[in-house]
Length: 350
Image (cartoon, rainbow, N blue to C red; front, side, top):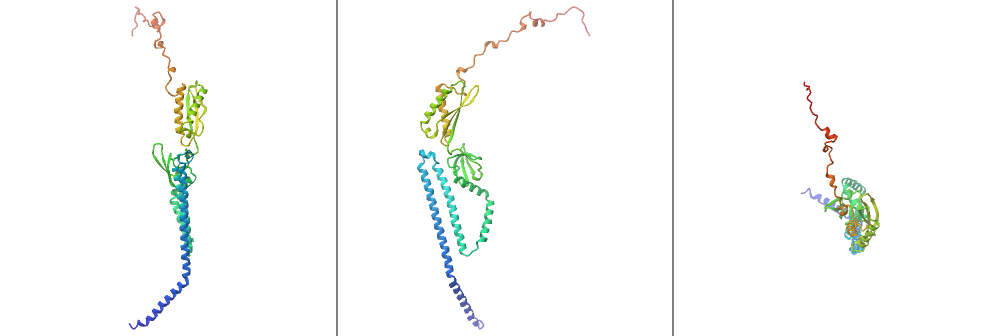
């Protein structure tokens, strides 16, 4: 105990020295720390406010696009524009991409500014991030390809909900458009999930306008002027009735003779229609033209033969066999069949 007493003043002095140095260090650097803290706080507040403002602006823009699409849905103008569901999904997909990109840019820039304010060397961090990005890119290249393809498809409006498309690997009506997968409903009701990166070419059957074509085979003896008159009457009547007056975007035209054969001739009829309505217009045209041809007495090749064209009765003499030369006993054929009489001469034997 006696030996430890002289050391007490020394430890107290060391503690006082440490406290003094700490206080001096804090006194010398508190202004710097406060400046760095305020700078970081200011960066975080500005980044959060900017991110919130950008996301709200994008949300308002998307809602305005959806409202304008719903306003024209069901009207005559709505038939010329894309439907509301297609506009809604397309706008929401674009809005999601824009919001994600804006958040990434704003928060990423804010994080780099915070690290720079803390006097942290960013070169090794950026190099490591670059290497990690390359590795992730190689490992998830299919996912990245699908995502980028989906973004460009949506931005360029190559197709949308309700469109009839041929994507090569599958065809059908577009049910849903995503950034990675496009959902199609086939003609038999099946659902196809097609990755956007696998789509190499797209045939959109619902953009712009479509063409309805009908080919009619009639007798070569029919009058072309009479056929033209009947088809023109059908076209005028169809163009004045609803809903065909909206689905027809042009007059029904008789293109003329497409083929002339000995037993038939083919007449081609065409009409420009609303996108996706060409098949309905074709079926209605065939129905109306068939009724008009029947009323006008114009025969269509391909059905049952007409009564006037029945085959002539067979010749009764065709079933009678021709007379035989053997029926006359004086004929050379009959004489040749008479057996040779045997004579009484000697017989030759072996």
